[in-house]
Image 1 (tube, protein in one colour):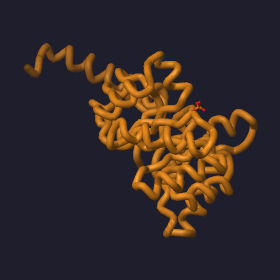
Image 2 (spheres, helix red, strand yellow):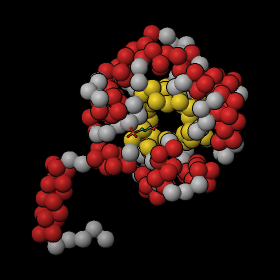
Image 3 (cartoon, protein in one colour):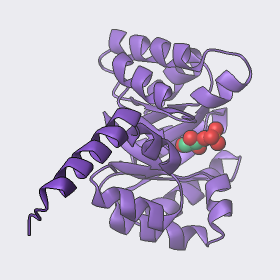
Length: 218
Ligand code: E4P
C-alpha cells in the first residue's frame, strides 16, 4: 500500500520522507491556504523532495479554465498529479488531461457511483473522503469496500483507490485490509501509527537493564 502525506508543510514531508514513509503527497486549497505560501512555489518545493505523485488542485469550476489551470499545474514538475473535483466539468477536465498523459486525482468523492464515473473518465486516482462521511454518520469505510470491489470487477479500469480524509489509524488499517491502493495521511496520523504502549514500556525496560551493565556500545 502506498502512503501519501496529506499536507503542504514542506518540513513535515521532508522528515517523513527521510524515514521512507512518503510515496506521494496530496494537497488541496485549504492545505495550501494553511501553509500561507504561494501555491506554485510550495508545489515545486514539495515535488523536489517527493519520489512519487504530488496532487495539486485546480480552483476553477468551469471546464475551460480548469483545463488551463491543470496544464499550468502539470508544468510545475513532472510528478504533479492534477486534482479536480467530482463534477461534470471536473470529469471533462480529467478526460482531457488524461488523454494528454497527465495523471489526474478526482477528489471529493462520496459515492461508489461517482467513483465509477471517475474511472471511466480516466482518473489515475479516485479520492473518497472517509472522515467526512463518518462525520455525517455515514460509513466511510463501507464506501472504500464498495469502490475496491467494483474496480476489481472491471480489471480494465486502472484507477487507484486513494483513501482520503483519514482521521485515525483504524481508517488506515481497514483500508489496507480491503486492498485500497493508497492512503493519504495527515502527518499526525502517521505518527499515531507508530505509537504502541508496549513499544514504549519495552524500550524503557531494555534501557534500564542496559544501564545496569555499565557498558556502552561505542
Ligand atoms: C486529500 O486529498 C483530501 O483533500 C483530504 O484528505 C481531505 O481531508 P479532510 O476531510 O480532513 O479535510
